[in-house]
Image 1 (cartoon, rainbow, N blue to C red):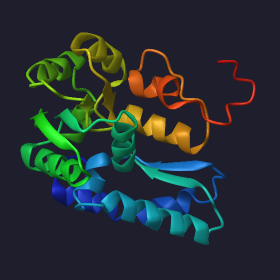
Image 2 (spheres, one colour):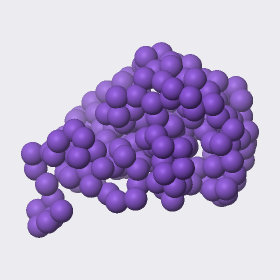
Image 3 (tube, rainbow, N blue to C red):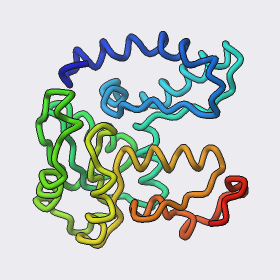
Image 4 (tube, helix red, strand yellow):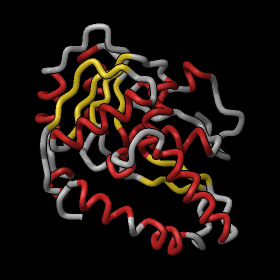
Length: 219
């Protein structure tokens, strides 16, 4: 995918079944379909349909891997933070950003403010400077917001911004990528204990430890 457009997102999605076939015998414990907007352009509830379709395809190949999507993981992460009113930054062109906003609202979140960086080149999305993302976040009206999604895109760099933004704005901050990590850890019943990556990845302190931790992990 060279351009982040509805047409190329649809073209990418048509390759999903082939990719799952190629991954099906890898013996993994979990699969994350990590393109948030490719799922959300499918309309309300699409992450459930996609996750179910992938799980059935894997099961047909005798793989019982847990299946998640970054779109579903973001909603899971926001609910874990008990967020109702949110703000977000996206790299997408405005029409795609509006679909992301509509999708999150269909999941019951109130999107109080958002910014679209309008980067259409897929390669450039992965090179967006952190300073540009933070500047966009500073333009948001964060009054009465429960959480800030600093990057509603797995590819847009975010990890080194999450804690900085959380410290600056004084509210929980997450991204599609950190939400994906959170959802994977919870689904695999591993400890959620990653320092300097925002409140969501310190979730054990709020939501209680999982019943099984990584063997040999002393945290």
